[in-house]
Image (cartoon, rainbow, N blue to C red; front, side, top):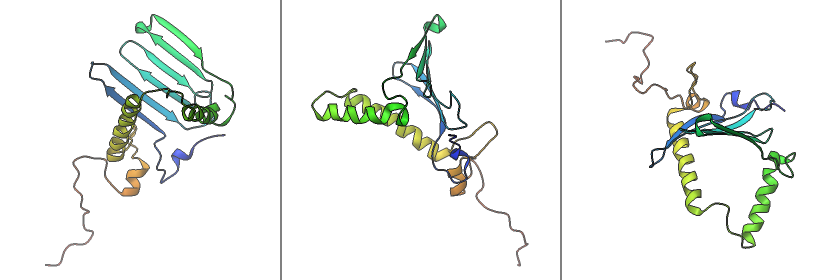
Amino acid sequence: MDDVCVYALGTDLYHNGSIQFRYQNGVIASYFYSIFGPQADDQETMELVGTTGRLRLVRHTGMLDVVRDRGAEREVLDLRQTGFGGSHFGADAELIRELRRFYDGAPPLVSARCGLEATRMVMAALRKMSRIGIHSKRGRTSAILRAKNVSTQKKTNRFTARKAPRKI
């Protein structure tokens, strides 16, 4: 099944983006995501690029490509688990199982602090995209900005030239 709703006028979802993070220790991470398009093995990918390596997850295959030590080491991990053929590649069922484990007293997979940091990064990226939109090299304006009738240019006059001369 093809997921091409991103091309529909008025879409309000961020189906793709590129975000850079700079951590306090100087590490710069680049996060690019694209989760739409014609059916393909790499239809949905997540890639994290650092200064000495890269992680690239291809959701449809369940493979994680790990590059370390400036390319000196490379490993491909098969992350498919039971239920991979199910809804959202098994993630829906796993979420329910994890919630049950947590309810039964198991510690969470990540700390509240890590969850907060992840949420803060996502919210910062969403605020930025909502403010300036998503652009391609061709200058495509996001559908949200088109719907709001907002210019993507930072310094633009916000008036329309009159078609008829004014009467004095």
